[in-house]
Image 1: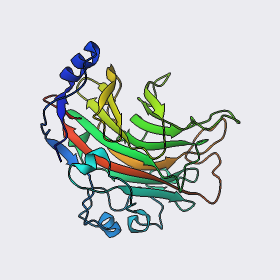
Image 2: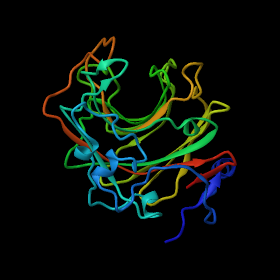
Image 3: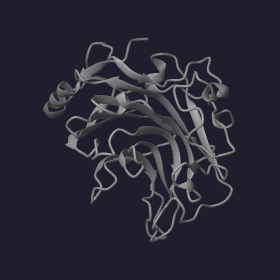
Image 4: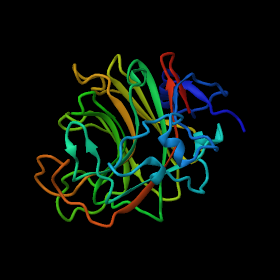
Length: 300
């Protein structure tokens, strides 16, 4: 198996603008973080010190990762194949109600999110997140709700600097049809919020993302592909508030399922709105790692 190619963002953009195919001899970027799951890992790994993620957050107060983590028998994602790591399935149920240390019991949300915390190096400088996602056809999401699949939360928990979402927008009018797409959005408090990229969420397909973040210059760019195709730039470097104003700098990155409620005129979606009972939904995640992109290196 050949190594996954990498390229500088400047080179990517030059090729993108000239219409050339994106290709490069195999080269390895320095990794800032690697959350890909070894074949030997078990669900219990995620509640131990061996887990690259927080062993107790973010999930219901009487639930552990050992009860939620599954390893589905499906094809590996593009970036899992490189190191022979495996897919993780995360699920939510009626018990997925997070007890926040600052907000209390978030009764209107359902959450199961792998959390990367106390890693300021992953939310500063110039870095690129990689993540592959895939729908679970046996336990489909309810796309009349809004879901966060990945996001960077501010240190004061009052903003998301960027997010990957699916489903209808929060507070969509009653009767709005399901929105089965994947979209990358910007800073939560921008009016209007920036939509950097959107694509249909097709089943039986790996959707691969590269989220390139230049915290020094408040720039974000998005790369995307499906299955085994190399990543291509779909949103060039664009201004987006990803550093914030103190004390909202730094923060932490989440990967998983956050299902938001439906309802109109919600003053707080943490506590207001409606969730159908009997939730049994899941989603597949793979290939989570972060490039150190200070030199312009991005794994494709």
